[in-house]
Length: 163
Image 1 (cartoon, rainbow, N blue to C red):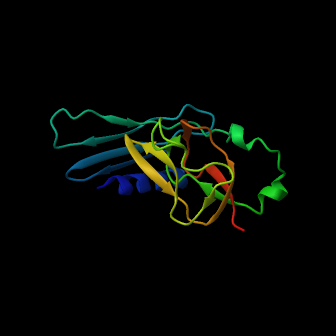
Image 2 (cartoon, one colour):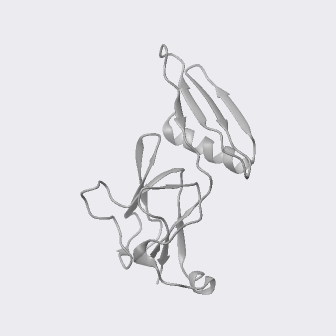
């Protein structure tokens, strides 16, 4: 089972509303626990069985946060104006980074023109850095998440003007 399959399983369990799911195969044992609204979320654990005394690697799950506009996108727009834009959402749970590394420039800024397939940001999940690519072409209107912030699955990250 590779990381993409594990991430897909986590997404499925989160959407299903199940409080706990256990999966065991010959070489892997996965337990996914989800918290209820208003409670402190549990932690999901993945353990490889063949490795003697393999440490359990926690996958932190943070409570859903209200997206906060970045300092570059502090314009006040009404929901009607936002409706004409395409929202790019997080495909995974993790930590959002606007730059490939601290000493490099951000992948995109407000006003940047993007094409389908351009890398917009990186999300770190389980010590892996995942490039998040655009599925649309257009112009970045808003960055909805602060750099180095935790993000949830399906949380809005960017607003894009497709025109």
